[in-house]
Image (tube, rainbow, N blue to C red; front, side, top):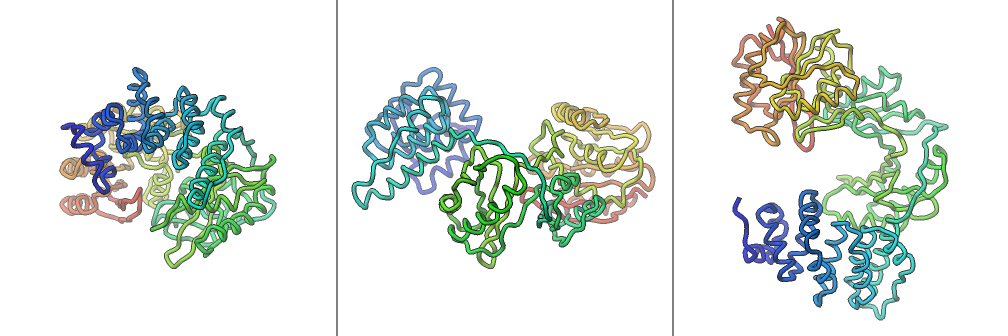
Length: 514
């Protein structure tokens, strides 16, 4: 990696969309951006560092550099250039070291530019500490001197309100029970809605509508729904087709929550909440801010750092929005066993839904092999679906095996894990089933790596598995795997199903060893 010079970095920062482009080259640009800020006092470089500080590795790197010499940051907080003062306050807030609080307070007390003050106030909220809290409680926003100052005064007041909220100690609420059924939407992996519906029926629920990636039903037993494993999240539909306008959204959501929350919780208000806006060509931050203005009151308080409720606003293709409520007061312990994961790890709900979708092909009391087990999620969920005689996971990465063992222990799963290249693994006696989340070739491996690995796994299936046994393979490499299967007459393709995961569209293949 060739590092960028200060001159190259400054030139890129000055270009349209330069910071976005430079962020893609962050490892090469970090040192130069740091020098531009601390040596030259560049506001643009400081703003770029604020962007990088949202990533843990750069935040820790900056904290380490400041541990040796904090003076340049403190000078920037009191610099002559207003944009530098503003961005230095933002950077301090991102880094979160309360030692900066008295310097930001001193800068704020002398600040004459209104557009700088919101960043200083927000930084104090992020830094925390008794000194920052005491100052914010007594701080008052001066009224605007003229119409030109009105917007900045409003932004200053909003920043003050947000900073004060960081110090609120909201009481926690306990979900009790619903006295009457409500409509519920359970969301799972795409194309696997029927697998979730089948699971719910087995648990005694009656799905009212089954969609590709969601199931709707009416029930007053919300905690009981978490016995099902094939869904990501539980949402309560609050309103459909509401105008995508803050006042209308706040009115509909407020009416729904005012009726729902006191009826099924112990504890006094307010409930802390956050707003999640999803849609295209929307100023999501501005919309959320306006909705919060209409919602805040004795029962509800917008508190993104300390919330129990999420208001989900989802833009509709044909106009308007649908509103959903997510209750974090409902305990979901289904996947607590997942103490560790890898970048390419399968979500447990996806693993559970995939397995349920192919349950007709699984064997009772099976001996199961996963030759690419990673952190163990697929294998653990297989053991939780139906009793198995044994569960064996193989992975070439020792770090993955270590994580898998910890996860299995937390899940009370008796799986056995072996650190080995699966292409060198030999079964002492054939297994009844094989399941595998194969490398997709983007986060892990490459297409060329996958060609060798996939071919090797398919060639070993007759040795690993009993005649007539089933292999469940989950992969993004649809064409590659399909072609490789065609070339092997001892394997027959029983079914295939495309689903969705993180914006990708993997396929579930079910094979049989002839």
